[in-house]
Length: 116
Image (cartoon, rainbow, N blue to C red; front, side, top):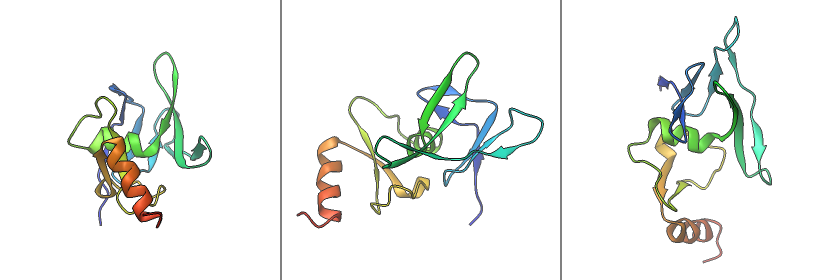
């Protein structure tokens, strides 16, 4: 499958020195050569993250949110959350992400992990 690339959007801000693919690879064009950004872990190691440098600040971004905000059809409003359909928090393909309420997200996470 061919990757689609776009300028990333995070919390409504476009980061023009970067590109992100629809499966979560982030490339920086900030320096003389392009380079793929290394991921770190957010919080307790539950989600991949990277740091983007904006005009006046650096932003710590969760990759699944970055992919969804850039490629998703709906805006993340209010208390809505992004769910990984296959329960793999490291699978950040746009086809694996969906916008849900916290109640639905908690229910699916429990069901996928065998609690209910």
